[in-house]
Image 1 (cartoon, rainbow, N blue to C red):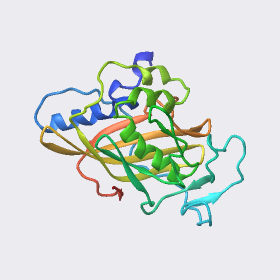
Image 2: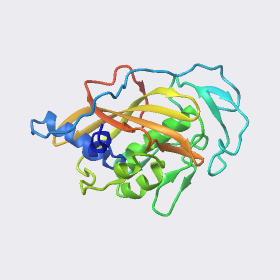
Image 3: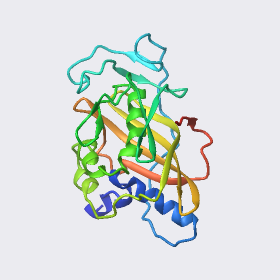
Length: 246
């Protein structure tokens, strides 16, 4: 397989989420736009491991002692190395532009830099979920490139993921987080599917945004060693998702 065949599609670069979902809306509206689709990107297999609830760690998993490799970059407490999420976690909702994103004193984000980039999420299934839901807003906001710089891990596909082809954000699109599925979680990696409702050009479509994530440098990041680190697909509805929105 050539390097070109291995490279992620430009439509699945993390900073081009808004452009990708807008393409889905335009297709529904009858405008012919071709988007390269990649094969072999499973989105329906849940591989989470159920664990008993443990007081003080959130509702989903088993707490483990915090080692240096597991510790949060900003000291946010709580480490859960396996678990699942069966109900929508409590959250406050703030806005980036018109897109709402969840915040929590427990799960993060716990830090915001001078550019408004939100980082430091709990090392737990909920922390991974909050990271992914924030990525929907940050990956389509005005500081999307600055966000992508810190959101993408080091890895084989980082250079391709970070390429800026000038597509920019789709400011005319309105997006709303509508639900989620935690497809897998093992403490070192997570796979989160966020259902997003997108409205643009007078049309509304449902999109699935699947994030392949790793715990790296004390926070969740997009896994640059995965060729399908971000998969964006149009879906007929959000049945099967755990409903979660502002």
